[in-house]
Length: 100
Image (tube, rainbow, N blue to C red; front, side, top):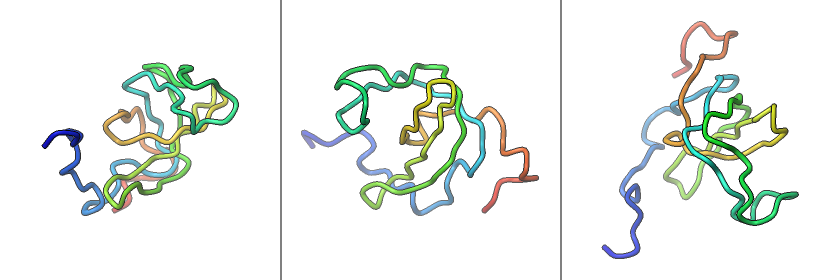
């Protein structure tokens, strides 16, 4: 299985998203620009481990993963991240429970 990523067998879309709109999250890792983030050099760190943001969009990637658009408001960056790259700090205060 050379060339396969370790999460290539994972299909998150068979379940509900782990996060919802407005949830407050923290980055579990540093994120460098891979060339898709306008206004930053390739390889430049655009999110650092511990940065806090809010989920503002939920999309999909490769019909396999949820991609969460996270507004890292202190940096002024909107970055797409996988669930495994984030940890929940607080559910959206406007929601009484997670939407399913």
